[in-house]
Length: 113
Length: 116
View 1 (cartoon, chains in turn blue, purple):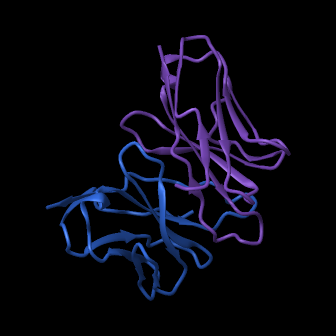
View 2 (view 1 turned 120 degrees about the vertical axis):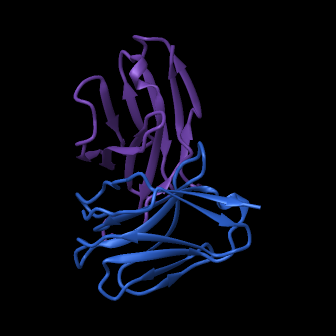
């Protein structure tokens, strides 16, 4: 699976949009981009994933560049409860032997009042 | 993290004892994954199981650790003769079966294992 690069930390003001970048320049055509977050002492929480097209759900939006070498997770209106470590992971999907998620260090996001 | 149930949430063992961690996947999910998070470190994959089969155990320590996912009942991660270095948070995740390959893994809230 392709590696990802994320900034180690970022701050965001409450109520503003948080834009979290991720580089995955070696991504291959059949690999998805997944985003998870881990709020202190809890299990990782799935946020969103995509292949080529931009995606949106009730939690966030995912913008994938046309060449698929980078993506941005957007939290439209950050709240204090969004303070967490955010992980960008590239994976071929969970069939047969492609099971493992490779977590990097992620981005520590701190939302401030 | 609704759906994946792990128990116990906290487990204390003395060195040399056995630890058994249980994971009930989301209803209908046939794939289970175990991850370990050592203090101040990232999540590391341990093992991937389907019903009654181990698919990938490349992240499992070679000794003392074993995992199973029987036809009936929860998945079990078993650690024999625990040592202080086994103290960590152990997370279980599940996903649907083959044919839904892009569906995400959903995680439980983990078992915090402390070795005295």
